[in-house]
Image 1 (tube, rainbow, N blue to C red):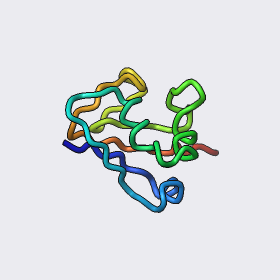
Image 2 (image 1 turned 90 degrees about the vertical axis):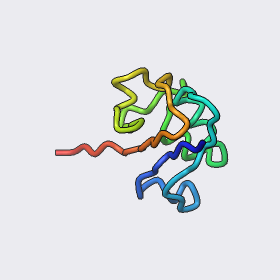
Image 3 (image 1 turned 135 degrees about the vertical axis):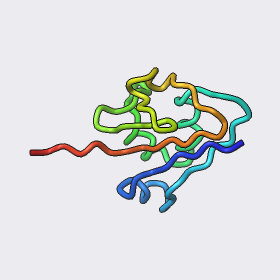
Length: 94
């Protein structure tokens, strides 16, 4: 089964223009493992999403099947084999 990591337009250049990154999963896995697999070819992209401790960066939102991972278990959130993970840059300003 294939989970999909969907990237916003601003980050696609860091993944050779890919809008989605497929990750093969045979069973549920933690979000951290899915992100590691998705971003493995693009370490700069990985560093834009997660900090040096492996946590989701403050100004990045990650949703697993529509649920905010930060409000769930963060990078320990369980991801099913057919899940859709959306990475969204937070917009701030005034």
